[in-house]
Amino acid sequence: MRKVALLITNVFLWITALQAAYLEKVPVVLLQPNGDTLHCFATGDDYYQWLHDKDNYTIILDETTGFYVYANVERGWLVPTDLIPGVDSPKEVLSPGLNISTQKMRLLREKMEEGTRVAPPKNNFRNIGSMNNIVIFIQLADAESFTKPVSYFNSIFNNSTSETANSVHNYIKKTSYQQMFVTSHFYPAPKTDTVIAYRDIYPIQYYMPYSEENSIGYLQNDTISQRTEREHALLKRAVEFAASSIPASMNLDFNEDGYVDNISFIIQGELGAWASLLWPHRWSLFSEEVYIHGLRVWDYNFLMTHPTYLNTSVLSHELMHTFGFPDLYRYSYEGTPVGSWDIMAGNGNPPQQTGAYLKWKYGGWIDEIPEITEAGFYTLYSNQNHKEGSVYKIASPDPNQFFVLEYRKKEPPFDSTIPSSGVIISRINQLYDGNAGTDFINYFDEVYIYRYGGTMEDDGYPDVAAFHHYSTLLNQFNPWTNPNTFLTDGTVCFFELNQFGALLQDSITFYYSPEPVGVRENIIEAGSVKLFPNPAQDQITIWVDAEDGETIDYQLIDIQGRMVHAGGLQVQNNYIDISQLSPGIYFAKIRQGETENRIKFIKQ
Image (cartoon, rainbow, N blue to C red):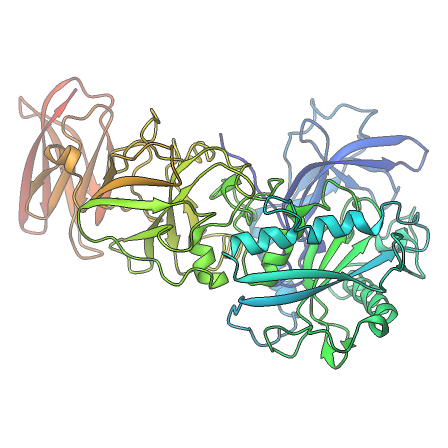
């Protein structure tokens, strides 16, 4: 059920600001040194992308032979084997999904971050107004000319002939509630429908890793960073090619931070193979000083022409990074905290909305998130269409965590690709910015969407997350439901959501109670201890209000006075397996210092 997410290796640990859309199973065609053609797939983002076959066996470049071969893991690193994809079978020797260890990823990331450059001052996410995005086409020395006309690219970026047109302009306008407008301009400006591109002085292989078969490829190790040098030098040449054709009267700094707002570089060609810089990404031009009319070029989107990854969704995702929005998928960790519910976690096409919380925090497109404190019925309006009334929050015992509720309606133009309609409940951890920046050990997400089957240990079904009246799986939310109200440390919060409305209008209602009203009789209290549910089948939870570090013991005793289970308890939630006990009446005896509480419960 779990899904292995993105991994990081040394080749792509350039700078923490570098972000991109996460692409899965992109078809790649490679030519082996002996002339054989290898059909495989690439998965990842700019930090790291790896090759694999259809069965998820990892493939790497053997720099000694120049062949793409199956990879094994030795001492936490990927190493080449003698097994050649398409010739040899890996199934008897290797395991699918091999990659470097989490510890290696952390050490590599820390090492590479030592040399990162300081970014320009933040614009405080002032994402209100009109932005001019510059588009520059690049043709590498041995690449074919652009075959698609300028009108094709203009449609993807700027089509506003209708409110439902699938374009970057329409997406940003819609998702910002008509507060942010982006118009893309192509320079040098073509006089016909033919693309005018900067033709570079180096071929494609120059921007691929070094190997015995590619002697002009770049080196990337602890002391050499040719990958960064070559990319930034390429973009500097492209900007200098186009700069004089950009009108001095054009506003390139809508947020007034002294930098060009954004440049989209479109490179003619396919995705690169193993460890190549030729992958869509957003980054900053920190190693070269390049100016357009006195403004330094900094933020840019690096894009490839293949329609799989040059579409409205990928372009919008990258531009949202420029606006300060973080990635919501995970690096180096199993699990899917958000999945296909947010453009910052997955790329539907047409692109889906981003969550209301991100619109508030990073976009500044929602003024406030009202907090629910009193029992009663509440109404949510759809995230896509309403700035006001589209989101509520519920506090938790942890001041850094709270719950967010929003209504996602599966409808065009920019929420037609979400799994279904209903109320989406998210857990927010304000200690983090996004779901990718972590120490890889104590891993928590800024945004986690509750879903059926989701627990602290199990990823559940991320697409099954919409609560509504007709759902047989998700029609109430409390400490005993599936999923329940758990925080990042497993603490269960005591409130209930139920009586969700139908999905017929642009709004949906629900009932909130600060106590789990529907199952209140299932909570048994004694002093500072709560036990639930009662009756129970497979598991009980013992909740203890105590000081951290306090010693708390428990015993489970049957009706004849025999101890059937014993152990220690922690503060707040403790989960105890009773599936092996025979049905009947039991007592939980909890000793907390000099105090002893006894609670009777029924095992069904």
